[in-house]
Image (cartoon, rainbow, N blue to C red; front, side, top):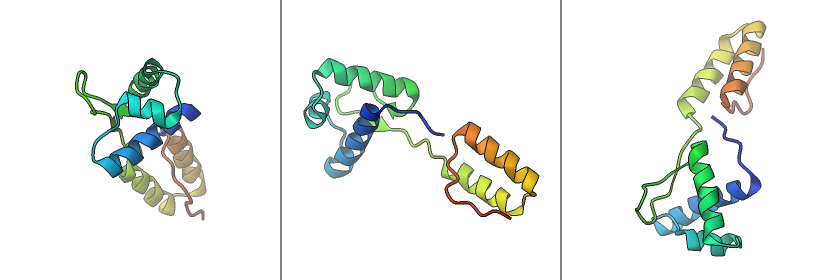
Length: 113
């Protein structure tokens, strides 16, 4: 499912992903602030709170370095839609594509009849 992110939120998600892959733990708010040139730790906290509300991040309250990116891509669902499109009539393909769009499932390049 796609989550609509602001440019700044997307930068924060990308930074957390890269930092965690490199360091083995998530960054602190201060590290995010310094890396992205944000004005204060409270600005980072506000962005993080909004990302948690959107379901793009999880965190353990009171725990340091507990930010975790939530995978909203649902690869099984995408594969199911793509497989169904292969055998669907043109009318059903249109319905499947509309349903995928509503659910935010990115079908990428899919074959047509």
